Image 1 (cartoon, one colour):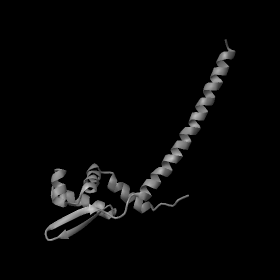
Image 2 (spheres, rainbow, N blue to C red):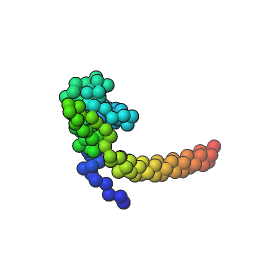
Image 3 (cartoon, helix red, strand yellow):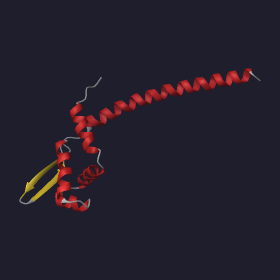
Image 4 (cartoon, rainbow, N blue to C red):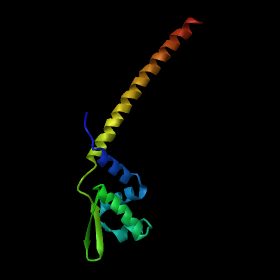
Length: 120
């Protein structure tokens, strides 16, 4: 079984759990932006946006660079491959369980049909 870094997954999913942070990632997927631009886009204070950017930076999803008085944000170099693999592994487990449940339900329906035919 593939081993996943629990700390990395926790940090990534915590960062992705907030709608504003997911929106920031969407925005940065189109173009780099300053913290001021992001704060205006999301109708937030600079302090609030800095906190969101800090969480995204800690997760490695965003990098920032300060030039003069402007801090520019861009998508981080690491992708979400490990997180996607973890989700895919859970999806496969659930699909297998649902397939098994479908088989049980099908068997019960066939039995019910046979038993129902005998009582007539």
